[in-house]
Length: 549
Image (cartoon, rainbow, N blue to C red; front, side, top):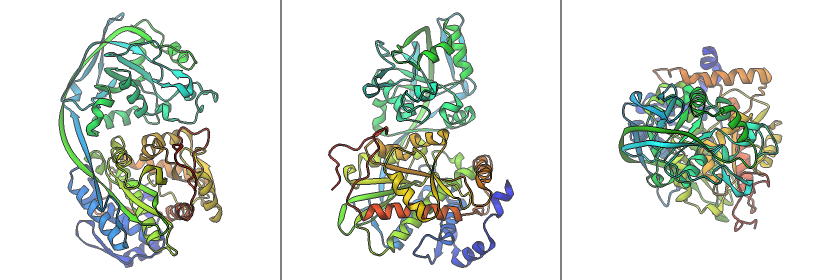
């Protein structure tokens, strides 16, 4: 695997990169860039954004400042304009809460056949999405509310007939279609908005729950328990107004802890889970109660979105948005090769696309925005703030093209789409790939879940069609088997430390192909007058006020 991580880039590319740019202090790069999307240019940005001084990009860090300065300098060099109401940055306010001594936290269950003491990190994790300094529930009645879905369009209400105000709801991960594997329910095994963490949290708050715990299932949630435990041991970020849109406490229960809890309450967890798959399910009071208290340190700050604009020549009020996230929620992410390189790749791709459009002739009819968004991994705070304070009105935002899932696997015959089949943007991408003698693929179900915990979700919930592509697995050298092996190596890099002296070398040729395809999509959209639409079966829809011209 280390051979894959270190020597794939051809010697010719390395030589070109060395001739192409020179490094200065703090990862700053002086370079002569090509007007197109080129592997040499991509490597320069990739190296700069992976430099040691830029690795800790947590809010308020020196790495944050260096990264923002680098992005602005590059956009200025290209001749782009500030895209946030005349400014390069859009400040996103946040509230940061960090649980104090989480190892001392226990969730006490009483009222059942026997009391339970559920330990933090082993049996459960919890935090305060309302970011309160002191948080507690005392003998809060436990209610099993299925998947926590209340949606008339689906004729589904997991809260029907129950008053959960001040109570603790226990929910299942994902949605009934996923759980039952019934294609007639929701979208079957295709992930939907109703399975997302954000949706469950908002519904629990809307119904007045004091606390919410979701039962962990690796297949249904898309990540293992260790990933949950590690992420929840760090800080929790929210927007200032989020306190009223979340329960005081939220967290996860391990599958084993949930089974013990239900058994103590005299309930069959497996039977109740099966019942939650059926129309007409009603919440079940478990006959037990929960107590939990903890303290958190609370601080306030701002972190910027960086936005550049290329104004259109005819329909300047319309805009296509390309976006990538630029920071990490926690300084610990700078210690991971995967964490450092993943965001560097997306940002390098964003800069290359901006470069290509800046030099394109003729100029686009519609405007293009290039948005480096903050705090994506902290609840998509940057994109949520963006869509609430859009530089271009959301009804005039033509599409959002996401660049956060482009691993460097090598040239492939395909390009995967996360959330495939939901919008007409798939058709635009299929046409672009045809021009490259490639084809579009649907990402696997687990990968598809990423759409609902990404910045794309913020745009989608406002009705803007999104295109979230992931580099394909069917490699020209080795086929699908080689692609999946390399993707596994890419994911395994999350456990490896980045090199001390700079970025590793990667095979960026496939990433260049992917970016050129996404450039063609945006290029076509920028010369049209129509608005691409969501498909009838999608989880989202454009407002009816937006029509094709």
